[in-house]
Image (cartoon, rainbow, N blue to C red):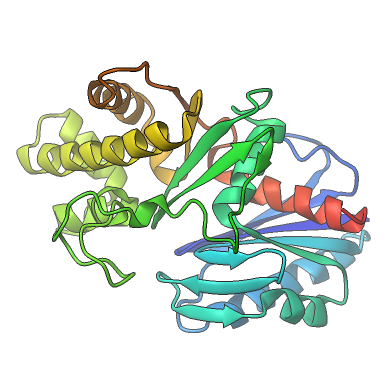
Amino acid sequence: MTLIGLDVGGTTMKAALVGEGARAGGGDPGVLASESRPTDRADPVGGVLDFAAHLAARAESLGSPARAAGIALPGIVDEAAGTAVHSANLGWRDVPILRLARERLGIPVAIGHDVRTGGLAEAVLGAGRGAGDFVFMAIGTGIAAALVLNGAPYPGTVGWSGEIGHVVVRPGGEPCACGNRGCLETYASASAVSRRHGEGVPAEEVIARAGRGEEKAGRVWSEALDCLADGLAAATLLLDPGLVVMGGGLARAGDALLAPLESRLAARLKFRDPPRVLRTRLDDQAAVKGATILAQRVLNGG
């Protein structure tokens, strides 16, 4: 029997089929198949349901029918109600995705916030394993964070925790999709780094050009690092984490991200030591792996 783990991103959806009871770690023989496809920006809800149905059909074709599914969603997510409350990047509001997915698939389904689900995977399998309390920040199309307490992501009262990407770090600055101005993700997300550089250059190349001394790329990347340090300094002073785990596509920048971010964060915390800053061990598969953990738990009645 198979579990479906599906991570819905603003640009790409990623998924895995995992053998029930298998440890959903990297390279684990329990991973039966992995897939990705572009997120349908014109019909994101229909695209999610179609992809989930495709994954269930693929599990059937492999001779191991899907018994449960976990779906990690971006934006504001009410996990208890199973509702995608709002995503600025995908434009949906109050979507009863849990009910729709259950009806479409006919199996137990669990819904999670993509970054909190990634934080769960980091706590169980990744860089946060054994850390207890830590912050997991994912930088991709947008920016969000998960506060992990005693190994479990904290959702907040109604699922609004972790929206650090919409903390205003540059008052009166560039407009954000959320309706505010100067939000962290308008300066430091992968899409923002690419947009602010211009010329269709992806964020990874902007960072590489900054490392080679290109003036415009260096200016854009330095501003992004400053904004990230501002956001993490606020989170550190409020939450006192001992560890920050950086994930999402931009974490692949490695030392080009971690080294300057650590030094800028330390410079903003004058009277206390900064938390350790580590790169994810699960790369961009954290939310997929977390979704399979959710699927296993809903199957077990958890």
